[in-house]
Length: 112
Image 1: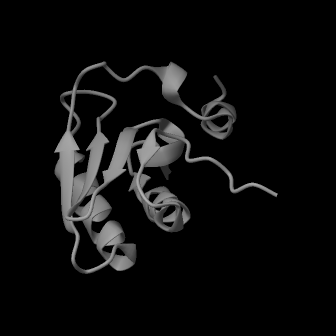
Image 2: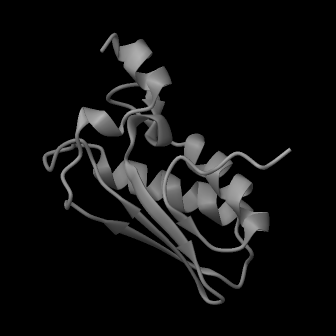
Image 3: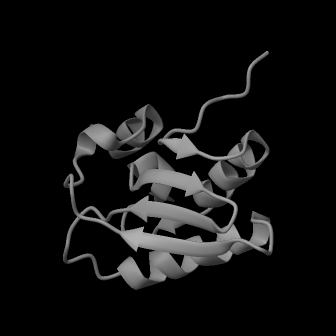
């Protein structure tokens, strides 16, 4: 049986894939009460020998909880990442978020 794929682009050691996906799934966007993974806010994760780099967006540039979400992402990643990795969370706006990025679970929850 193969490991499930990450619901976003992932480049790095296979041993870290599932712990990182699980960590990011624990972060909830409080505005919609759903995981940031289900909402489609994670654009990609790259792990190198020195750094764990996460690209994420918000549903709106005016998101009032962006700092809270970024802090929670850093906290959850710190729990599972090897201590030698620098955790870098990059907030990006291109391409703009759209509802097409949401998981089927999120679409059902939002009744879309």
